[in-house]
Structure formats: C-alpha cells, structure tokens
Image (tube, rainbow, N blue to C red; front, side):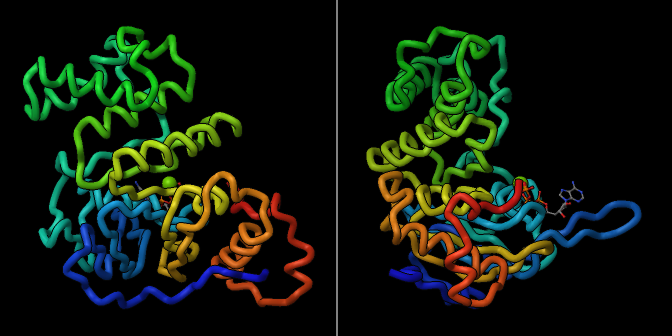
Length: 286
Ligand SMILES: Nc1ncnc2c1ncn2[C@@H]1O[C@H](COP(=O)(O)OP(=O)(O)OP(=O)(O)O)[C@@H](O)[C@H]1O
Ligand SMILES: [Mg+2]
C-alpha cells in the first residue's frame, strides 16, 4: 500500500471557533546587532483540544522558535498567536514547556519538591494541595516510590518522567515539548514515547510536540505539520492518528514515512526512490 497519508497544504486555515490554539501567519525573527535572522515565515496552524500536534522539519527550520513563541517567550514580527481566542503576549501557567535537558531539575530539591515548585511559585496551590497534586502526577508517571529521591539518583528516563509530571501537575491548557526524548538512548526513548501515549489516553491533555524524527512524529502525533528548511514555512499537514509504537516497521507506516520524507524534501515520486529508501534511512539528519 503506497502513501496512505493525505498531505494537504495548510497555508490558509480558516479560523475555527473550536481551536484551542491558533497560530496565524506567524513570522519570527531574531535581531542581532549585525542582522535579522528570519526563523519562520508566515506559519499557520490550529490545534484542537486533546490534539497531539507535532512540528516536524530539519534542523534550523524554526521548530524551537515556534514553540517558544507559543510559550510567549518570543513575540511574532508578523501575525499572531491566540489561545482560546486570546492573543498570546507573554508566558503564562496555561502553557508549560518541557525541554530536552532534564538537568533543568534543581538538584537540591527532591522529586516531589521539584514537581511542587511551579505550583507554589505561581501561587496556584497551597503547600498541602500542591503536595497532593504532585504525588498524584508522580503516580501517573510511575514514580510515586521516588518522591523523596534527589534528581542525581535517577536515570535519564526517570528525569524525563519527573519533568512531564511537573508540567502536567500545572494542568496547563497545552503542554509544549521540545524534543523531550532526544537525549535518551533509543530503547528508553521508545519507552518514553509509549508512556507518553498511555498518559495521554488517561489524562487527554493537549500536546504540541517538536521533533526532527519522522518515526517519532508518526508515533507520537495525531497530526503533523511539515516545515521547510530555514526559514520554516508550512509544507503540508498530515494525519497520523492511526499509528502507535505497534505500527513501527509495518508496510503502511513505512509508506507514510516515505511520503512525509518526499513532502519535506520536495522529492519526485519515482518508484526508484521508493525502492532504494530503506526505513532506517528515513530520519532527518541530526
Ligand atoms: N538566539 C538566536 N539568535 C539568532 N538566531 C537564532 C537564535 N536562535 C535560533 N536562531 C536561528 O533561528 C533559526 C531557527 O532556529 P531553531 O532553534 O528554532 O530551529 P530548530 O528547528 O529548533 O532546529 P533544531 O532541530 O536544530 O533544534 C536558525 O537559523 C537559528 O540559527
Ligand atoms: Mg530546536
């Protein structure tokens, strides 16, 4: 079966009332003393509640920059970002970011204190309620037994789970993840993808997830936005809700991966390319 995914240009989505997050013709720039670097050019997409929405594209195409703009750390030079119809103009507890480096966990706090910290610092909850909420989410990520451990005694995968519990404990409207599993070994990475999907089944949070692995995008996402190389523009949006970790290596999955590869790199549809390209090659260079 060839290319079961539908790819369609997503350059002009009609603003729908139901969208949780609308990114509307957003251009993002970095201004240095010498020059202006355009990271994205008029990017538009919409995320609905409980979407697992993936930004996929080669290194330097502006994925992290887009995520930072949604988080409110960077203001668009063009276009606007709206959360439930409200223009985003700064960071807020309704959008929490999980970055790639889990050493963002302060080492002098226990696992539980780490999860409680944002709840207390933002005055979302009082100490007792914060503790109960922290334990609730630590249990969800399978770390209840490590509540009193310190981060340096945990494995990379466990630190990743603490970071996810800490973010979910804030009960954000949207969880933002920037290549959260990229620093993990392949097996742990796969395990974390599986756990994230199980957690999503249970909590049904809304996720915006950045990766440059086609495989990870297909497994984690229900929709994938494909971005062109620098500056990032929308190439297409594809649906991927039919896949999970059990689909890996299957014929349909591989066909979808090749289809995405072609859309990303604008390659022809020659049968030779199809035959020559082994699945293991389908990964954008790190
Ligand atoms: N602080 C900065 N100052 C100037 N230019 C920057 C800055 N941060 C990023 N850029 C530039 O903006 C562009 C987009 O960068 P960004 O980090 O968003 O890419 P990315 O898609 O996340 O890449 P990767 O997959 O490597 O993480 C790149 O050309 C990068 O060089
Ligand atoms: Mg990045």
